[in-house]
Image (tube, rainbow, N blue to C red; front, side, top):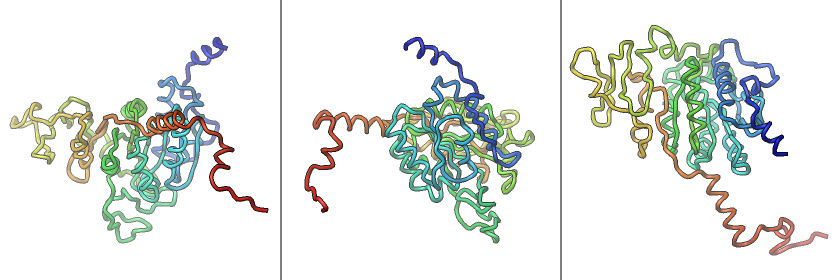
Length: 345
């Protein structure tokens, strides 16, 4: 038996092993393809058998994801993927549980469930595909669409203030928060690795282009001519520097970030703010979460915060063991029949 187990453990999985036999039914050119490929390419690195992975989704284009993964999976109901995943992880703490959701699924009907799984800190991984639109239902504005967005459901422009998903997650006490983008697959792969490594709820927001209903909304972050002046890659312990010639940076004016030029000699790299993803207080990560392209800042990509705290399922298991120690393992039949019992004749 041990020889069989050793043989199984020695099998090296590949991306192909995580690819199901289902036809991928996203629009040609959709950013979801890149995210799927990155996940399939990265999971073999973790040394976990396929049967120990579970992908859980809700409703939306992103929620087709479990069909395309050759793992266990659940395509659940609108906004409730986090609730199903909580049950899976609570009952099976050793599983690697991944939640795939979208900006509408997680932050609209699923908003309450989203904040509470983060607050509870189940050891699960949340990947939120953010295309700032409702794609599956044909182009209505979503909770992350910008003010003034003209869509089928906002013909005169959206008047809603959009959510910043990373700010919402940090407000719910998230220990791990990161941002990636579909077009930068090398960086996205590293974010998947970091998400898996974190013990507790990891939240990864991925900017994803919807070629049909919101094409080009992230183009400044991906096009060759604009990317270097629009993206700030975060590295722990490194100064916040960016630009085509690394000639721009971020200093702090109190608690307010300020863009400065390093080209005129007034500021040097030593004057810049230094990224600390392990800061116990979430203030620094929250400041970064408020920086984005709509506020004349570069868009931070990378890990905003990575700190650990006790996980929910570990506390749950400890309580179960404590109860068993005090009251015994219990018997389901006796539990049904204890206390006041009535018989219907």
